[in-house]
Length: 114
Image (cartoon, rainbow, N blue to C red; front, side, top):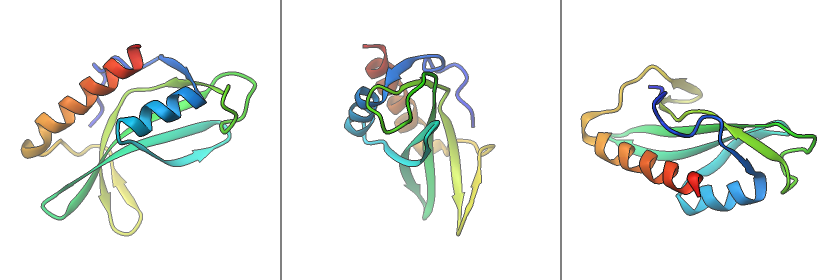
């Protein structure tokens, strides 16, 4: 599920600041290379792992791990993990998780706006 209405798209943050902010919100940077990073917040519901994912792309001349690398963020995506290596981005948020996911997105928007 793609949260196109979230107010994260186009926000730019330096890597050092973004890394601290995302860790403070409970997100982990699982996937990355020198030009992009993916932060994920994990949910487990009825034995199934789900992730709220936010991607950022480096838009200046720095490489990702340089604290002054400037990342432009996209929109959050809710995905389901399939063992061992699959993800489904078209999955809907389970009813029991909707309030938690919406609260986390609101928290993310507020933190990124400052």
